[in-house]
Image 1 (cartoon, rainbow, N blue to C red):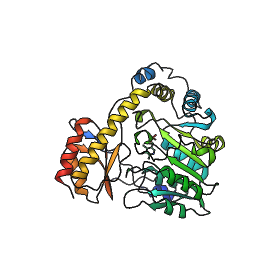
Image 2 (image 1 turned 60 degrees about the vertical axis):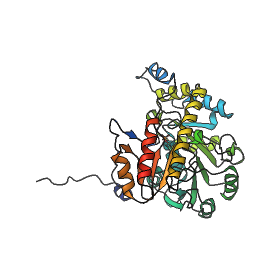
Image 3 (image 1 turned 120 degrees about the horizontal axis):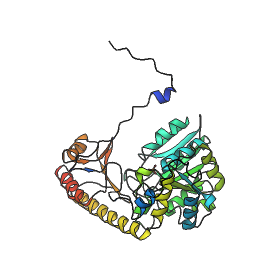
Image 4 (image 1 turned 135 degrees about the vertical axis):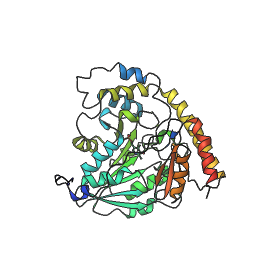
Length: 354
Ligand SMILES: *Cc1c(COP(=O)(O)O)cnc(C)c1O
């Protein structure tokens, strides 16, 4: 007879969380289209840069100084206005922890990045989810209206994961004016490189954090740069705001290899652009094919498409064809993957069109 061991007591809100479930791997002849990963490997020269970085007995540079300098140069900001983290999700966690604790509220759109609810909960704060509009865009009026004197953080995700649409520059400019200056506004631009809409907000190009020091822009090397395994992302904003997040970050979590890979990647801009252009072309083919098949696909500005559906049969049909997609209660997200995956995705989508 086995008896349940007595386990250490943990915070009740943590104990109530569902246990972690790893996504399914794809079969050898299948495609994993469930995590918005880049089907291309790292950019040329990146693997060599990681390989030459062999001082595994030494701690990395705690501040990722070379990468901050390179990013600062690229975006025309001081290196002190850049903070590097072990993926931008780690940075979002650090900012939320720095700004919001017990009794404080974090306002974010929903459905959006699946990590937000957990990060808010771990910080001990209360999440306020604001439903998106029917077309998958953020409801910025409702987001602004949800801000109260308890709000410490507001998150905007553009393009929104998993629905796909962007926030426009004009919409963001109006929205910023409605968020109190004491409230931290995180602009999550994890997919910025894939955006083709001319009117999209570009937090770094527009330097929104200059006129509005409560705005922090977050980007990552995981998606367009194809470095998801190495865990490296960055935040750009006011240095004092970044200091607060630095204080809550886990020290030395960005490895030297991740920093070297990111630096080498930044030197390969033409190759990056070519890959992004190829993925955008595939995205456009997917969107056109899916809409032709009768799916009501929202504007797709990242490296994934969204099929609004509550049916679990949809996910099963893709899986039966060797395509691992990402199901949600109100839709299915399909990443733009290998060239050979496109026709297979479209064939399934046509067969089960609503
Ligand atoms: C993938 C993603 C991130 C960050 O990923 P990291 O790998 O942690 O850099 C952040 N926000 C959104 C919306 C994402 O989809």
